[in-house]
Length: 171
Image (cartoon, rainbow, N blue to C red; front, side):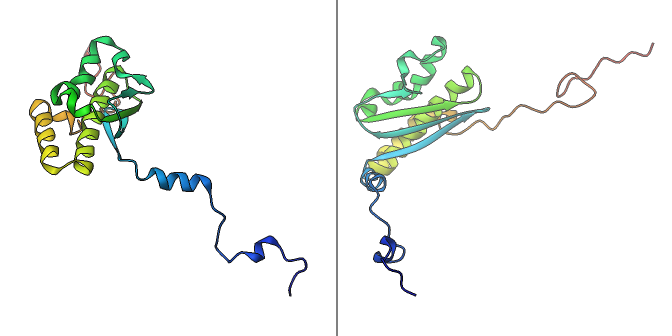
């Protein structure tokens, strides 16, 4: 049962699709040297996207130098200060962070940055320099690379919190 006029679909081979410009762009971008790493603290999650660049570090689109609270800003700089500016000079790091409170987010950010730079060195630089970077970070603070497993304990009945019980009186 042939149809006249032939439909435009019939002319193409089955399962072939027209060239997709979005797909072509995605394939060309796959050559960009980039890695993703995440950091976690309590319920805060930070995802760091590290690629070849010129030394920018941004958190939620804002430069890391403007991060609030100011007291904890130095905590996010720890990986940079430990490893030296020269190791971050040819990479750009973009961090997205959500969940948790201010302190937990800061700890998640520093972990994401540290893990991203280690992953970048492992994938695009050599193994020796990756191990050197890793040793420097772990020697200073293990939580820069390893997540803290502690979580909030759920409240139980018979008391105001997880462990404390209501006061008992006999009279």
